[in-house]
Amino acid sequence: MKSAEDISLYRRRRERLARGMGAGVAVLPTAPERVRNRDSHFPYRFDSHFYYLTGFPEPEAALVIVAGESPKTLLFCRTRDEEREIWDGFRYGPEAARERFGVDEAHPIDTLDEAMPALLENQPAIFHPVGADPAWDLRVTGWLNAVRARSRAGVSAPERLQDVRALIDAMRLVKDAHELGLMRRAARISAGAHRRAMQVARPGLFEYEIEAELLYEFRRAGAQFPAYSPIVAAGENACVLHYVANDARLASGELLLIDAGCELDGYASDITRTFPIDGRFTAAQREIYELVLAAQLAAIGAVRAGAAWNEPHEAAVRVLAQGLVDLGLVPGPVEQAIEKETYKRFYMHRTGHWLGLDVHDAGEYKRDGKWRTLEPGMVLTVEPGLYLRAADDLPERFRDIGVRIEDDVLVTPAGPEVLSAEAAKSVADIEALMRDARAGR
Ligand code: GLY
Ligand code: MN
Ligand code: MN
Image (cartoon, rainbow, N blue to C red; front, side, top):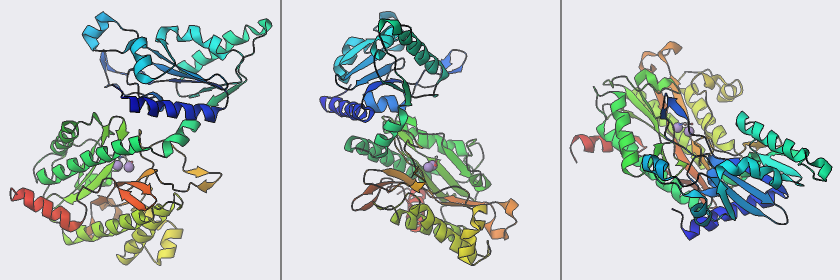
């Protein structure tokens, strides 16, 4: 249920979008329900763009915004249905939806095709997530043809079809106070789950048992979903970047890499921690861990308003490349390791991404060929790593060490704010947390 404050928040976003459109009509459907197998569905997740503008959580809905001189917003949604509500639960229905979600009009979703041609008459443009769903593209084409068919009656059809997502993406890139409140809470819940994982990890447990602890902690704290499939990767599995099998046994002497974050009220968190299954780092593990941590701290330090998007990545690469040269794992000097990208053998991904309603959130990274400038309110991850596979023919002590450290960082005028800071990160803090848990403290 939306409070009055929430309603004005979503209304202001819609008004901003309408100003960005200038004139024309935007149509934004939410996500469809998706079948998992036979008659079982995946848990429903609304479309992020639609939700950003409405806060409306039900499937089978579409938002229409008419911009220009007589602006209005219309929500099309499911009607009340006593029978369906007995089986599936509450639905708002148009009448309550109009009131609760602050739109000018609300109508049954099955009247959309009938309503759209009239709404598009004499409009210069239609804004739509072009190409996102072929079925919707076809519907839009059908509406346009219906308007064109009335040309002899003096009606003109929109000449321009524009992807509405670019305008919304630009808005989503800078988070408002409401979003930041949710993102802080999501990150705190996930940080708690990582602490819990460190406390329960023991040789002999399976990766999925740790995954269960993470999911338990997310849900217990009120988060609805994991924001993505958790990665719980012991030993050599940590070197598989998208490992999600989570079915191996934790062995003494190995590291455990966990990349897991919850989604709270639509907002993602994304945290990675790596720690020793025994509770104490070996000398080699510690050497690699401290190197990745130094790279991560350097990258976080580069998250400043006015900096270019790529500066945190460059800061991380410089520290990692220098460390790899010092360890004799890539040839020096460091400038050459960076220029020739020899470090990429052990660090093959980038240092972060935007974070928000989507874990890899909306928003451009470059504009006119130049990296975006960081602004207060932007949230990004900072996640350097090193992946030393046995197959890489390394000195024995460095084999099968995969380390990534990932935090969620908000750009503020005063510098970086680490939203996920409550997840233990220094060697001392991790070892102390694990020691205390084992001692029953
Ligand atoms: N967990 C997804 C990512 O780190 O990008
Ligand atoms: Mn990430
Ligand atoms: Mn991650």
